[in-house]
Image 1: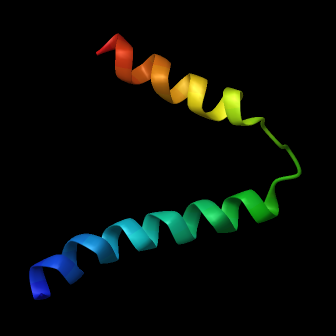
Image 2: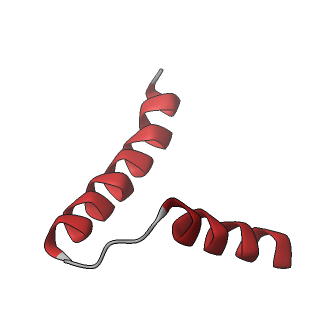
Length: 45
């Protein structure tokens, strides 16, 4: 259980940081803009 918490705590912290940055930035992106860029980076590897 401690190992699971250690792993998920980092993910939760990263998601919290992303949420905060998104709240502070007026720019908005569509689903395709966000996930298209992600797919492009993953597929380029």
